[in-house]
Structures are given as C-alpha cells and as structure tokens.
Image (cartoon, rainbow, N blue to C red; front, side):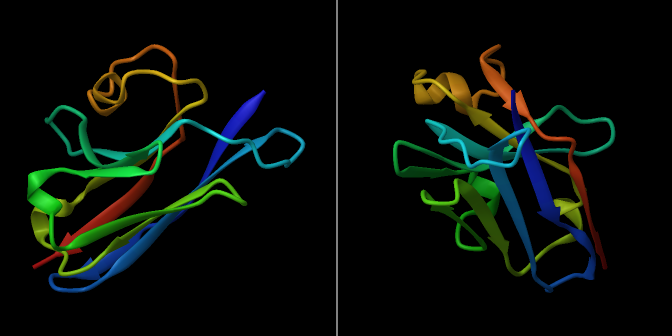
Length: 129
C-alpha cells in the first residue's frame, strides 16, 4: 500500500514564505515512484484546485501562483516540494498532495478528478494580512 506523507504548512504574514514537502512511500517506508505528483488546495466554500504539479518531469502551475511558487521533485526520494514565496491571504487553504502511480493523461491528473489519483491528508496554510 502506498501512502503520501506531507510536511510543512503553517501560519505566516502576507509576503512571507513557506515550503511544503510530500513523499510517496510504501507503508513500510520505502520510496515509491509516481508518474505525476502535485499540490492542490481547497479553501472554505470553494472547490479544490490545482496549485502546481509535475508529470513526467514537466511542471504545471496555476496562473494565480506563477512567479511566486516553485515546484520541484526529487526522483530518488520521490519527494515533491513546493516553495511558496510572496504569500497572499488568498493563498489560505488546506493544501493536499496528490500522486498518480501509473501513467495517466497529465490533464486528467491536473483536473484532480482521476480516480487513479491518491491523496494525502492535507496540511493547512494560513496567510494573514
């Protein structure tokens, strides 16, 4: 069984930075490779949306975070990191790591609706003005 282990998140003031990390591993702790990995977020009363992700080494960003967030992947440890700079109050949300263990159309993954996607528990990011 494969699990996603998230870390990072927290509370910062507007303009601050945070870093999120997500590792794909088996329950016994061994790294497990994935085809796509990404970060999604959901704010209260809003739908879940893609923040940034990587499929087959090709990164994709939501327009709202371009130039402020950077996604990177460590293929050895199967870890996806999201460096978030110049945070704004509208970035406040629960952030979820997601992964597709098998090849799927990238757009299907980035839509966040593919049933083959596995999800982390989520980590809260709060940005105060």
